[in-house]
Figure (cartoon, rainbow, N blue to C red):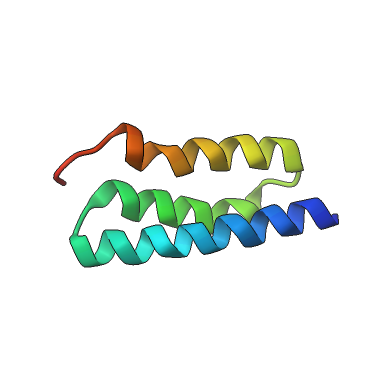
Length: 69
């Protein structure tokens, strides 16, 4: 694991924590699942480029799919 992967994991983990807290307090599934994915994926994906792309997509999902549930 190199420095860039660790830095991306740190940034996505903190954003994922924010999504997870927001999703649980507002009882919205999309931010909750996106936050959970952002917290788990840095442990599963090794490459920094692939990790960046997947985390950007997961971070944008709550903005793309704005739903009431």
